[in-house]
Image 1 (tube, rainbow, N blue to C red):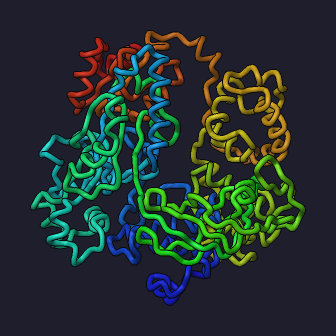
Image 2 (cartoon, rainbow, N blue to C red):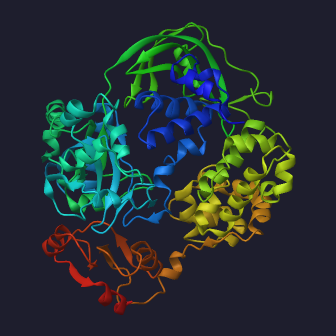
Image 3 (cartoon, rainbow, N blue to C red):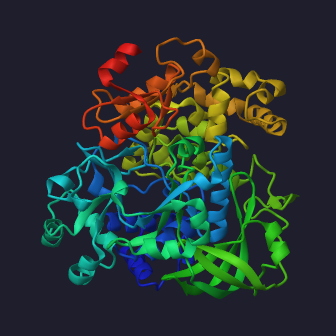
Length: 631
């Protein structure tokens, strides 16, 4: 049943607290609020939406697809998603000087590994824009989408949008923003926040008069990150003048800014540090929140995760903090609850990390704590594992079963509609395994209470998840084994084929680089535990992209084997496909040019900076046709 307009209106007027919503209602409200925001007509403030979306939903269901993935782009972005020319990674965040210090320590450790003197580490600091992220390849402008695929919104440039500082097109990642002074003078009476107006610039339907005028007046702009003004200096200066640098950078531009981005300038050091799946390690965003409050704890509620870990959630007296009403905050784990005395009647000091996530800094007034003896989901006795309280009834605990099934579809990331609300409804009709979900048809779903259209959509999404290609390591990670996230799964499948891993012994896994003996023991047990379900699902014929074995890479021969190559510009082939193919034949693919780069492969509309970097480091430059002839 859809959320009634009456409930939506009461939530907007704050006549209903979030805790009064069911999980399904909370998800629906997030969807409604997000679509309204994307349409440029927000029903709640950005901060209140962030609280509802990032905090309340995370506390209740941290594995919900709405929380884990980039928000759906709504009707404003109904176009088919296309691959971005380059992945748009997130930026890791720091909320204190201590966190920045740890980042600097990692820089220094990496610098020592490549023989770079600590006094030679150069840092650049730029304003962190609070706009609408996009990528301009000189031909098309894409939304950020999910970081790999986005929508083509080149219409914004066709409507006259200019690039900041009248720069050329094709400068890569940036954000669509509105000048703060212009917004305050001409738009504040119509839009609550600049970001709400920015969203209206991108919609498919014709622009209204205000948006068109902002474009003509060059108040609305696309700002490539490389065009931002910056502070630059050596790391020692950052350490001694941190506060002054923050104050200086925050006022460098006439746009909404919500922090400062620090990044390494040294190309070799950036290459050494690299990136994980989420962000570049050589970059961090500092977002400070000085607002704090002393809040009374009404109760501490245990919640069950898919692994059986019991997380304490502090229910708080409603408190206005940094523009949002806070009613809940995580207590992290029950070892901390015992140590700090976090119980009913406690008084805690609360802040909002990055103006979003409520965080308990300390317990000012300890009170007796209530440690649950039994699981709130299955009522089985709980056990202690170090500081963590665990439910070990893994096979029959409802919360864990629902969490694991939801996690499978979330990690597979090639389907829609199979979130926690759907999984809960399936569980209520005796569905306990993902393989049972794939065995369903439209008639089964309708008997369970799903409408005909919803049932058809769910079956279509199940079929899509089988037919749409997905990496074999992602498929393995979706089973949610302990210590087997995306990275470890990929590492394992670089050494053994997917069909062979269930026969591996402890010694074989321990011999793989990156797997210690304890981790190997956990992996062996994990593989035994999922073997039957894996076989049941594997028979559906998922379209799996096979990871190339490292040993097979070593037998490949081509002129560019083991060479480091950077691709740039518009190619006749998909650049993403070219990178994948290059890796499959033993070429090392990088995104930045350094002294270690061997070749720069250029397409049309290549930025001059890449060419200049290649000349600086003596990198061989070749066009796409020459590259193809060599492989």
